[in-house]
Image (cartoon, rainbow, N blue to C red; front, side, top):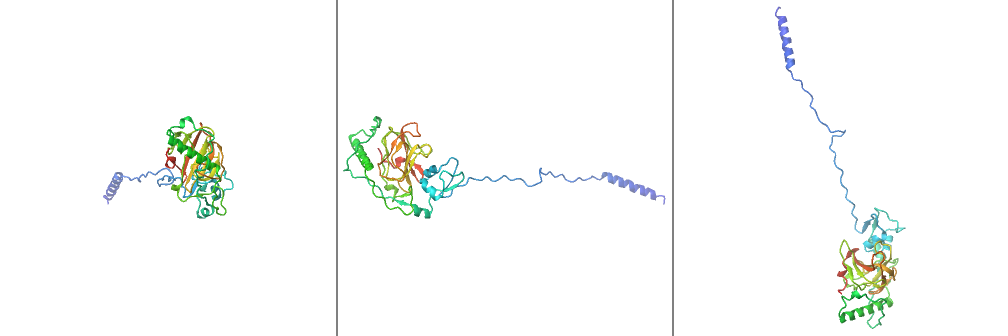
Length: 307
């Protein structure tokens, strides 16, 4: 009975020592990102600009219906009809326009125009209103060249004076400025639209055509037979402008004129006078001449005869 207290005391002492040697464990520390969500944020996907579907165009800032039609080789009147526009001046940024006809529209708006033949050489020549400048002799040095030029001028003026041949009957419901069809673009005959020195050549991205120097009032002629699809001053940077459509894919443009002597819807012969050279919306008197294929500017030297 006397040893019992000692055993109890020893037991308590050992228990205290064991308790002091026991290492306490703490809960692991977990670093969490600030915020309620633990998922890593993902960057927003980059959205690409919408691509225009075939035969359509999305209106951009600064566009006009006339400019859109010109850039796509179409008549602005056709764009009005294809898109059911009540007001051609009321187009909005982001609006999608049809710039090519669908099958139904193409079958109901096409106008077939027969090629305009040149008049026979026997017709009398009519003197030109303006004489060429003295600095335009570089390509007329020989007697043969002068003779050829004289014959070409005679045909040009006679063509302008002669009545245009009858045009094939248009499809029902067709409008002025509708598409002109041709059997083959390569069969079209071209000529220079005016005499003069070339002061600017075609340079894709910089110059969409060529510039021909001349005198105020000098004759500007249709480079090929076709239909006048625009005559006016509604396209910025071109001044008084004439656009002639020669086929489904080819048109020619004549800019900076002093005066226009044809009107929209006229059928013109190759060499027919269509305007007078001037400096409207330009710093000097000149003719800016373009040929566009499927609405895209191309080098006119590919089509014009060599001088």
